[in-house]
Image (cartoon, rainbow, N blue to C red; front, top):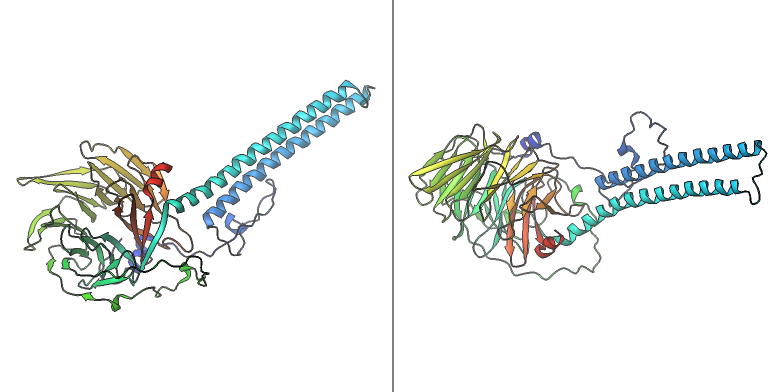
Length: 500
């Protein structure tokens, strides 16, 4: 979670416990009998040697489990075969003791052969079934990874911040640029195509926890740990597009991105770009960290959410406080405005999110929703009549604004969910996780894809936020994380829906 002023490394590690770096291992299968116990202290991970491998540790562990199942099944069938052989020998001994011949054309021998042949056929069939079932699991795992890479391709990496990136957003006006908010007290604007940093905002005295762009003008709204929100203007000029790199040329760069030093950054540093240090307007009525802020429809008012358990509504032109929205029992974590109506949703650590209605100037109603069992990290509107909420309880719920008594869909995941986003055209939900994964779902809760993640692709620490930029048949998804980088992905929407 974003923190109040200063570096966020210590606080965030205490709150989230970022994953430590793991050395690559290669798969090494060791033949063991199921009846033979492992020596004390030896775990599954100890059965993997220390050689280099391109397979992720989770996949190698899964392979080890599958091979172990095959071995145990084969051992059981082998024992069954031995028992059948002993039974055949016992029958032969009985026939010999009764004085019957077992050679030549004796029909008894034919019966024994038939029984043995039938048992052998059963053994063969069981082995084939087990082999097919096990290998199908392995093949499906590889297919999922390959499919994800075909549907979601890395577009560009945006590296230049000196601390974790909490939030990111794409401008709604031309020129279209990417904005990132970081714990290093700055917000940066980037060229989406070239990955070049265009402008730096350095007006805050604390961690910049949120960034949102005005719907029609070149203005940005940032929220900070210094207990303020700033509105500032920007002017950027996009660089000329660069020719695509020659992918056929050999690459001599073998350094794993996860092995970079903590202070090492790529691209242009923030000190090498134009810097804005003075805000057009400063909103400072909160008594705690301002964790998020957003523009109401039309851009004449903004709403801010704070750790002081309140959300504030301000007039942009005068910076005047219009309303203070109270009722949450614990710190707020996020706020979001409806794209076409005067509606605001706020989420909180009190496991609830609230819907505030400002459509009628004389009535400001509020509805409280208690669908989660842990911190609600974000709640966002869709273009239609839905709200999507994500939580540390490892679930994402889709709600209908017309009937929000219970969710219309529930997505269960294996890790806490951070700031989610929903694409405007296709309504695809992008989930950033603490475990560094980013998954895509539709509004009915069906999983569509997972963004590729390997030594050279994806985030190395928890993913904090996602945002969309849609264009025609394809669209771009941007993600940011505590590894100090933002990543742009090209999502093949037609192929994604066809896979569904």
